[in-house]
Length: 306
Image (cartoon, rainbow, N blue to C red; front, side):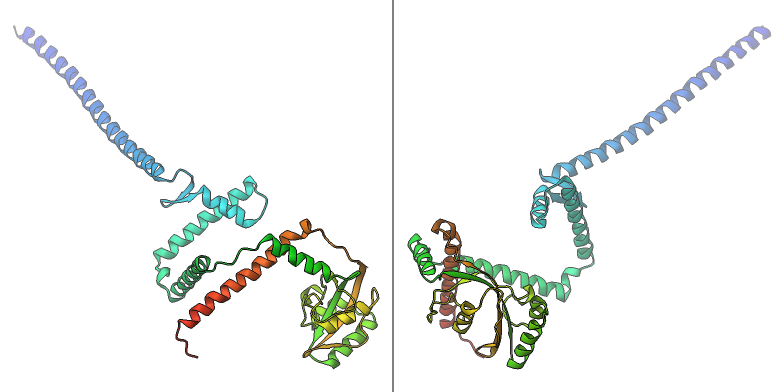
């Protein structure tokens, strides 16, 4: 009887240990399942948040900087403004520049640079400029330039052309002595362009004094000199190719030196070749006239103290 009891006791102990092992494995498995489920939930939440951020970006976004989109339109505008050949490398560089600019903007805003006096003043100036340009765009209405005006301008120019046209260079200074010294140096072989850049106060000084082709109907008549001062026109037509004025030519308070770089028979462009340029010139004149009228109207209605 005791042996049977002992055998049963041993069997019961074995069964108990087996059950405990199975229960322990189940508990560990449950704990593992809970941990995995928690991590999976966190990953799903992060993925959903990322998906929501991507979904919130504009359709043409190429990047996002702390939630602020850099768009394809911005990249396109930057490429056009660069005036460089449109290449994948250029587009990548422009995108990186836009990203850097947005980083700078956000950093400056975070440190309240937007409230600094110089920034506020610059913003106000930009606002004033944009507002003024918009106002002038709406208020200045130049008269249209009809084809007849373009034709009349062409005919007037052609009528004022002479047999020859001249390509010339000029130096203009403020006193006769300096002009005479320059002429002497030119006759000794010094470079005209170098002296023009050094001394000239006249047109195209930084280009060595080189002027465009010009033609005058001879004999020279007042008011028919293509906007040249009459003394200069008269001197130019008397010079041979390569010729240099012997004495300075006085025009108002300035003293001019002329050289004929080239001379040829006048080449008259056809009306079709010249009409676009002439129309632009006449439209510019019309714009200036309309702007002056707007200014005059504003002055009449304003109280200005000086």
